[in-house]
Length: 380
Image 1 (cartoon, rainbow, N blue to C red):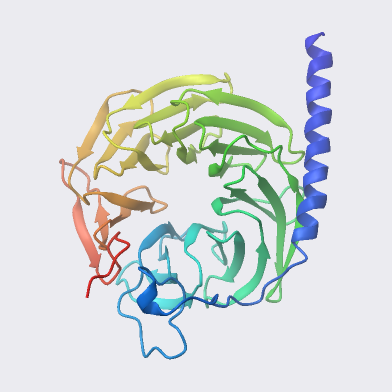
Image 2: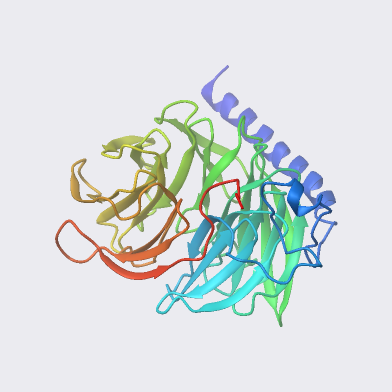
């Protein structure tokens, strides 16, 4: 078969899968949920962990739950923190709590829209919730069939048709929706579904122009898709097979993609050349998050081993390594300026750091306690 004929067949198959997925998700999307409700559970003494809102006869909850995921607002003024008992919004300057939305399932993914007005939250139960970022009001909820492992907003709409929101599920599905907001009303129209991944989708990122969607899977692959048609453009194999790609980030030039994986590696991909440019190896644990400076000259990565490394985007040697900032890190979020980051330790402490201009150590800006340590048992 000639290459041209093969490419045409692949494109037709991708468009068909995209339309078929749209029909499937449109049926699921009819089940709008306006609020979350707690599921029936046995008596507290019979369970080792109690997620969700306190039961009706409880006076209060001690602690804020275990941190599961975090995200900065686009202006860096707010930090959204998801836990196994709800969703919190903090002011980054003071860590003042702005609002709390109790939940009945752990929050598994978070993403602010490009203008910062909407916050998308994915739950372990498969629910996708859209909230007003200023008030915490739930605007609408869609119910999926598997945990929402990752979320991504496009920075701009295609053909002035609103903005795109991609949701990646642990069953390998990626659903793309078009979101419009007018007069405090949100309209969600499903655009379609990508061809199903062979494993769960662990990371998503739109290119700066919104025309390419990058996906990272739990099997270790990075794929590029046409955001308009859902056609698969290319799949990159560079990370260790079976090690989830946990983080994706586009540099401002739109031609460079950064990926971080549980295999301890950060890989720089040259999208225009369609190949791996270089591998950044320096972490001893899985890479939870990657970010970049506003000019794209520096790349920053954070690992669950408690280290943060600053890289020059053009070379493979670390510029700075920060160690011991938060041991046994569970979640990391980067501010838009690429200088400030928040790390959640497995001990339940939330710390905000500034990398500072020089030297090996960062400056501790804020510290918040009250979250539960990563433990499933309460003794006593």
